[in-house]
Length: 212
Image 1 (cartoon, rainbow, N blue to C red):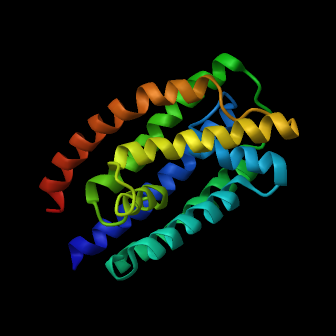
Image 2: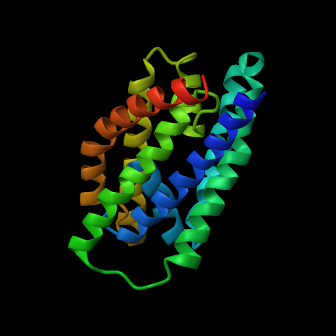
Image 3: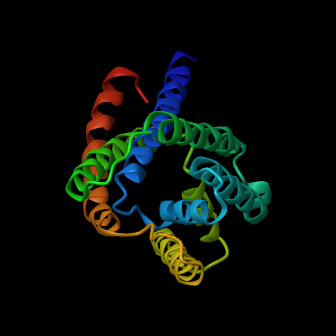
């Protein structure tokens, strides 16, 4: 029981870390990943806070999983909903209540983006190593493998491509600011290798300390 409690405390901390890191990468204003950039573009269009839009999109992904998987849906994954709400609240709080200072340095933005992408990676690695609750988008893409004859990584990549296409259409048709940029490319380069490094590190720590 103690180990289960420890796991979920760490998972909650992981989502909080991801929310903090994501808010800073948005503040850097050099572009973010395609799926995350979709929330930023919708924010420019609707003026709804980014974290709130993230909550809506993530909950939609959870319901998508339920519709596709039906009786095979693992109900522990319903925790994706409160965790997505927590993530959105953290993003909104950090972005709109803490990061209220003006910031328009391009070089400083790149440095901020790289540093806080690594912060996001730490949070994601914590959650993935514990393997209890997944992120909503990844859960939805995994569910789609049941009905679409493609592996998970292909469907997940298609989700980013689709997000990118929607962002381009919205930006061109409505003249909102671009939410993709050099940071999008940097993230593609550093996120995967960093995630692998931190996952290996955390696996060693958790196996030793909390016997996952």
